Length: 261
Image (tube, rainbow, N blue to C red; front, side, top):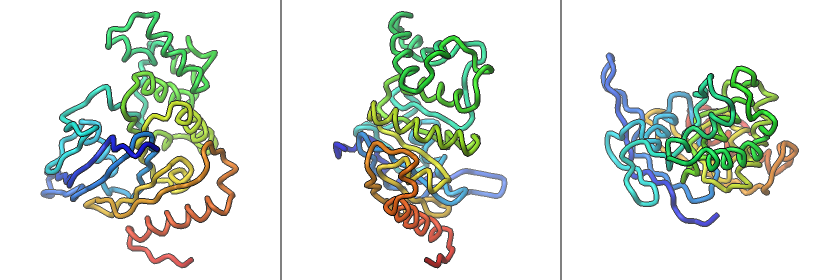
């Protein structure tokens, strides 16, 4: 990792006005994500993980504090921050290659240029042979790979992923965990990844953040010093098991649960 801070939250708080009154989702969140990191964030349900991601994406505004990308204040959405959600947003009338290259068309690239870039990420994400398939012809896992390839094709400064594998079955999820790590290893794009799955977080991340219960704040961070590249075999290693145990202890401490180990 370069150690250069690419994304930073400074004393970020967020309040929502509801029928029941004001709800404070985030309180004084301070976080730095370095260039090239795969940063995973876990926390109790409702702690504000997705709210923080939406603020990073420019889809929500902080009530107080600020978020910075390479020292520049984030004011709204931008192609330099690409988001992959759990719910897919593919265009059903477009083929795989046209879905992936859609954003490049908006940037004014020629068809030849955008197809060349799309084909690169079709290859990297294992979609070769499905370039002209439509979303309805693909499995849920393959559709999510299209969404990830589309985000990578825009060459953003950072990828923001909000539980992208949450709706998939366990086998497909495990396959895509390996798949996205392979893509990350080749591209070294900075990733901010939200998940509720501790094992997934440990497997994917180079750094792991744990949020407190609402109002959410960063309660702890954990450097995951497992070798890269990784595959599922590492999940039975003593080192992985120890990281998972530590992460679970930190998470459950934020849920006010006593853990016996």
